[in-house]
Image (cartoon, rainbow, N blue to C red):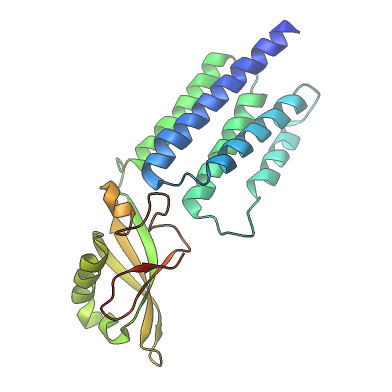
Length: 224
């Protein structure tokens, strides 16, 4: 019985440490979203506890992955979750499951956690490729989105947003209202590029679903 408690505390400790490093030191430093902390840690802890308890009885590998799939497909219907957020949710669920059901020793679990954290840091840190973020915008001048004026449009958007925009995709044009829906792509090598001027740190400009509306010569106005 004492060995079971020690094993539980050891696995739980490694799981929480890995999740803390993943979410606080990697995810938050790059994406600046603290509102999902409860979601990430709750999912991780619940998955760990359920998997650990089920692992005390006979359970097949297929059943374990079935449990993983059920939680992995969950989505909140009240608010869309971006692809990066879903990826981190997938990782915290996977960490909880691995730490709970793996029958290898603590050194092997530590190696798995270090591998997940290391690869995430490499991919998010722009080592393999420059990081790129995007934001959708309703632009109040359909004439300026013409292909011949693309360089001028990008220069104007850079001045208004302060973002290092390098590419613009035209998603929709409404000539009757003289508006166009654009997707802006900008580099995020500098943390300041993750936010629109005046936006709070917990409201990244690159969050899918966020929209910036430019009306004439007015400055950007977040309409999240």
